[in-house]
Image (cartoon, rainbow, N blue to C red; front, top):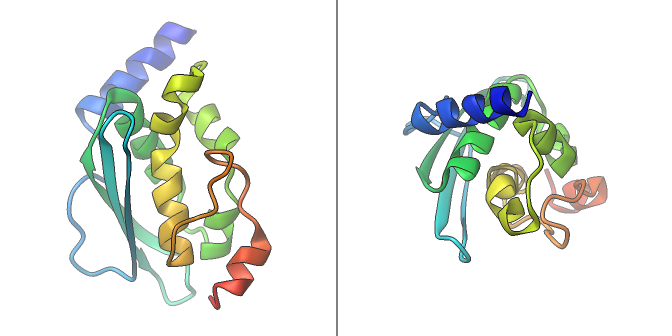
Length: 143
């Protein structure tokens, strides 16, 4: 089963979904993983109800980083900003479907970090590299 997930990761790395520019957007955020050089920039277009209508990302990174963000981007349509903030690291790790070592965890969760940052309009509190978002932080951000 791990082999199937590894193939999926390589496919998302080679041909990431939702990759490229988005000209008309409401939210954006970018960040990097200084330990390995991964960089990602996300832009999100909201619909009239404040839900994700479209999400695109750009950047460079390793297979895990790019694949994780590609897989994540497929799941976010229709979510509210508050739902994005509430996502936790297990959501992304389940999408990847393989064990991620501690040294690769920052790679795997960079996409989640930038999505949360875009939702909040500021860097997300990131003590646990993907800890469940604090809904109180969402309310404090004035959104």
